[in-house]
Amino acid sequence: MQIYIHIPFCERKCNYCDFLSAPADPHVREMYVNALMREIRGRAGSVGREDAITTIYIGGGTPSTLSAKQLGDIFATVSQEYRVAPDAEVTVEVNPKSADRDMLHFLRGIGFNRLSIGMQSMHRSELELLGRIHTPEDFEACFDNARRAGFKNISVDVMTAIPGQNEHMLEQTMQKVISLNPEHVSTYSLIIERGTPFFEQFGDVEGPVVGEETERKLYWMTVDMLKSNGYRHYEISNFAKPGHESVHNTGYWKRKYYLGMGLGASSCLPAAGGDERCSNTKDLEKYLANPLTREESSILSRKDMIEETMYLGLRMMEGVDTDAFEKQFGVTVRSIYGDVIDDLVAQGLVYEGASSLTLTDMGIDYGNYVFAKFLR
Ligand code: SF4
Image (cartoon, rainbow, N blue to C red; front, top):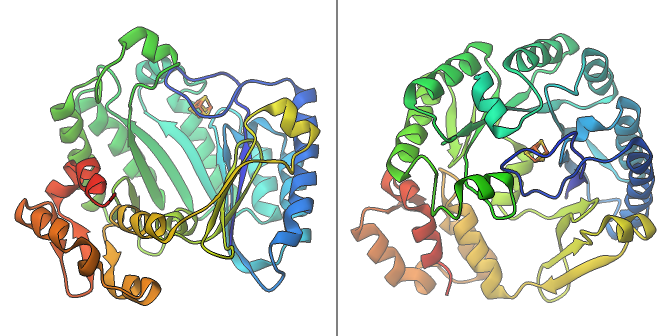
């Protein structure tokens, strides 16, 4: 079982962001942490003590808007109430501006062993355009402080397809990232989301603002640079030094069970008749009043689970394990998707191995088209 904890606060909203996050004053943050700890305690009974917690991921929002003590209290509550595996991967997302040296030392000292730093770009102009609160210098200081604090597993987020970005600018950002030698890099192409300042500025653009062709060029440039510097491309948008793939996110792609806690957090839990997908309220007032109320809950059908196994598995470069699929569902992938696979192979979008189905490079470029083919 994996645990995800959502911290829905940020110092300021970024111009492209439609995540469930907002600025909040210290009093609200304190009330939230108290409600969250009530939820953590209240849900402990739903996870058997024999079911070890293999990963804990505190994300957001910006978890580092909380104090080190608040983050420590949350972690301590999880550790007291659940059986956390001794080698569990424990990640916290931080913003370079708000995670200072003392906080990083404290977090490492109490057992956080993985850090995810939201860098996005090493160009001040791009960070300003995105509305980020930090500068390139803040990121470098944060990375250095994290290393000094003893973090040996650091992930860095990079944003690509930023309006106005060209290959040279991204190359400079990637060179800087690579020179720091983080264990893990996640890259995301900027998409304009409704309801964000960027939507007002750029309008209802289909696809990336920089254009599809440039976006693909930028993507493949990051792939090439990271691969030639020792990173394994293990998921469409994720790269790791050998042995440093994100255990938590790999769990999502492999459909492992997870318990999500905090505002709007969703869970996938074992249940009679199929997996249960449920989520918490997105309304902060309601959450503070009763953090144990589920807003939505449904039992996934066998068809839902099969479809998820296909499109999530294809996101990983190792692809869908067709032997494991047959073991789980009692039928072969081919017996359900034989015609789809033949078409996609003929189009050069997937590769069918002896016991796997993977995207080709062209399949990565047309990922959404391929995934849709597995929805029946
Ligand atoms: S820091 Fe992250 S979650 Fe917060 S507003 Fe920016 S993109 Fe959104």
